[in-house]
Length: 143
Image (cartoon, rainbow, N blue to C red; front, side):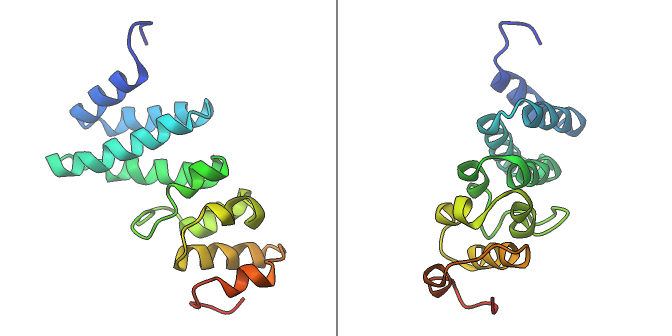
């Protein structure tokens, strides 16, 4: 990439072309560089592109998956919402539970079912969810 091209310029051009292959490579690079802000921008741009008829939801889904799996807690929490992760290779609450702890991520999650499912996944992995936190969870399952 030429030095005068900002990564967002690359993102904008790639989204405009609806170039899924290049978007996947861009997501790979941003994940490798731990550019979480860039990955969030990629996700948002791909979702917004749907309004213009560009079917870039596979790239948005991959960005969500990578953020849930690898990003620090505050970035992971950005994709832990009800309408995210529709076509990811697993529920985002389960994906996030692989590398995130309740102690780290739990406080960043909005009240609702995804927070409860994340607590459940962490509990299954042996993490103790404090009683006070369990009382605040939406009652969708028993922990």
